[in-house]
Every structure is written in C-alpha cells, then in structure tokens.
Image 1: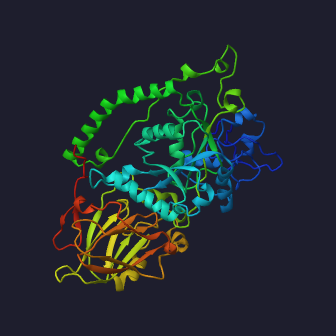
Image 2: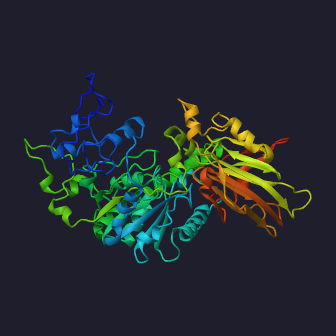
Image 3: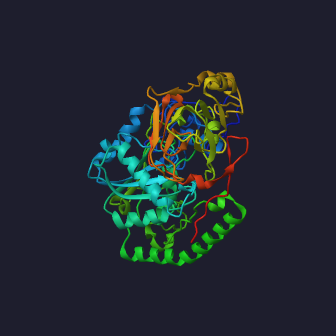
Length: 545
C-alpha cells in the first residue's frame, strides 16, 4: 500500500488491506478504474479504499484515486474478492433500455458463441441500432486473402443464432484488435457515418472480451473530446474477468463537417506510410516466419490537438490549481453525448470464472494462433490441457484407405495436447492432472487444494454426429467449440460420418459451429510426420497482393 497517493503504510499495525471504518459515510465519487463509488466501510464491497486514504479527502482528491481492487489489478495482477451479485451486472447494463443510444456489442473471436450473452435482445430490443464488433482478430490465423469477410459472416450468423434472433437491428459488423489497434480507425469512421452525434454509445458484452481496452483506445482517439481525454482516467484492464463494476464514460467529440474533413486528411496522409509498413511486415513474415509480423496492426492517431479546441474556462491563471479530473457539470458537458463502458455479463458457458490469474495467462494467446493438426482414429481421445477432451467414438462410411480424420487444434500454444486410447483416457487424465503434461489446472502454491476445487470434465447427454457428403477438397467440415479453451476443426474423409463425445468443465461452451471459422486451415500445416499422429507446422499465411 506504500505506493498509494496519500497513504504511508509503514506502521507495524497496518495491514495490506488497510483499516475499514463503517462510521464514515460513502462518497458519491466513482472509482475511475471500475466505476464503483469509493468508500471505506467494507473490504469486500466494490469501491473500497482504506480509511487511512479515504478519511479527510475532498471530492477533488478522491477523483484522482482508484479503489483498492483496481490498484492491486494494475500493479500486482491480483484480483481481490468483492461481493457483486450476478443480478447487479444485468441491472447495470439494463439502463440502456431507457436511453436513446447505440449499442456496441463486443464478442471475443476466440470464444464465440460462448462470449455472446443469450439475453442480449431483451436488453437491446428490436429497434436499437447495434454495432457488432469482433475483438482479437489479430490472433486469428489467415487462411486466405478474403478470410476477414468469412469471419464477419460467421460472427454475424452466430450472433443472430445465439444472441436473440433476426430481430436485432445490426447496422455494422467490424473486426478489430483492441491490442494492436487494427480496425479501430475504421470503426470510428463508421460511428461518425452511421450514428454521428445522435445519442450516447454503450459498450456491451460478456466478461473479458476487451471492452475496457477498447474504451481506453477510444478515449485517446478522435472519438473523444480532446480536452477530456487528458482528464478522464483509463479503465482498469486485466486478464482477470469482470474488472469493470459500474459505468465509466467519456464525452464524444461532435463530428462536424470541418472535423470530419480534417480527420479524412490525416487518414489519407497516413495511408501511404501505412501501406509501406504493411508491405515490410509481409516480407518479414514470408522470409522469417515470424508470427508477430503476420498479425494485423494499425496505429490509432489524433486529428485534433487539445490546445485548438480547449475552452478558455480551462486555461490556468497564476495561482490556480491544475485540473486533474473532468467536471461533468460544466455547461459544455451538460448536453454532451457519452461513451459508456459497462460491466461484463457473466456467461455460464465461459471457463474464465474457474481459473486463477496464473492459469488465465496460460489460456489466452499472445500471438497469432498456429493450428496444430493430428490424425485421429476411432477409439482415440484428444486432451487439450485439463480443460477439454474429445473422444472419437466411430467413423463410418469412409473409404478403406481413409479410416482416420484430421483434427486441427486452435488454442494457445501454452496449452499442451495429449492423445490417448479412449478406454484409458480417464486414467490418463487423472494421472497427469496438475502436472506440466496437462498444464491447467496448476498452482504455484498448494496444488492439492487447487485440484480439490477443480470440477473435472463433463460431457453432454447427447453425442455429436458430424457427416460429410461429396467432395469438398481441403475445407473443414465444422468447428467444435471448447468454451474459452479454444476450438477443434474437423476435416472428415469424403462421404463419411463421425460420432464424437466432447467434454469440458460442467459441459460448458460445447457447440458445433458451421461453417468453420478457418475453413482452409489445412494449408496452414505442413506434412504428416512419419510414424506419428502429428503434422508439422508452417510459417503463417501472408496476404498476396
């Protein structure tokens, strides 16, 4: 606690959490990291800060402080437990029902449909304009020059199927990377073109899809008023799900004709430089096979300088105190339109709530996924870490010389793959659970206690049957999603049918996804390794202009 702004915890009586004091009334100042109101009454409630920090501070000083939970997330990557009823998440985002606003619904491209909340249509209605945004596109492998259009089609199809049906008013589908900035400028352009300054904008989605990261990027882009971007603190971002507990917001910059033109000139001038950088990255990826060079990257810039649009009321005369927070009661903000970052909805199909911060770091890819391919015969089982399992029960109707199917694993390289006989799969799983051979679950401390809390794997009541009729050379038949762990792509022999049994914790997030998101994944792997079930990996596919 020594690095808190106003607190020195050097006394031996001080605890790492500080001292709560229920006699001091809570403030009305929201934490700038998660949005919860700051207080010092209860350690387990959102917005808590120690009484040593809270007591005696003015509202202006409190606006510069984040709560203890955000502090530990930012500095130590530790998530402190807070008591947040699941209903409060839904109650918070349901505020959009009473507002004339556009909804940006974010989906994790590595975890859909599990990151699509099934009750979304009840919140959005049928008339509200919706921007569907798929995040983490930089981590998807490229299998063709037109792969982005295919991913958009798969995302929209899945969102309609699992998010509420055809009644949603989808105005735009965008693919972005909140990490690398790819697609953000185009998203802003579409927001200016479609929504302009008609009303507020809400960022919605399940936990851990990247809403707070996108919020922070938009905060420092042309979509935010330039003077406000320096006064609004960034949202807390962390691999731990549920970092936003209440609504955070920043004012939208009105896109007048002159400002839109000025922005167009900046983007046009940057186009040549960006094209040359993209060409250099493609050449580097082709020569070296560097995955990072093949990932789509883009810079998010600013067209307007703060000094050009700042009001005189913000100017500092001699002796005045510096402005460190946004005064939303000022006249220029009373009629402003706002972007709201909302809490993530807890989706039961997601595995993230079962994992520790250490395990989440292993689960989430940091570079473009490179599919791993295997030949599996009937009565074989594939284990993906300790998170998922797929049994090949039967493969019938195929030609005699094709008695196996090709399985592609799309997951973090940190998740090990193990193949065993189905009859021995349960024994193998129990033997290697908690060891580096399966990776997750793991623990740097008490492993025995961690394994006792682990729910194990469960399958659905009905087995999955996948069939292939005719010839579709080299195209995957479907994907089998494994919740947040990733997915498996299946390439069946011609005119064949396969029976599968899939397992995840609580049987969560198991879906058959057609068409496959990366249908030409077969071109992304090398030759079959002799006397092995595995295939070699190759360099990433690169656009050919």
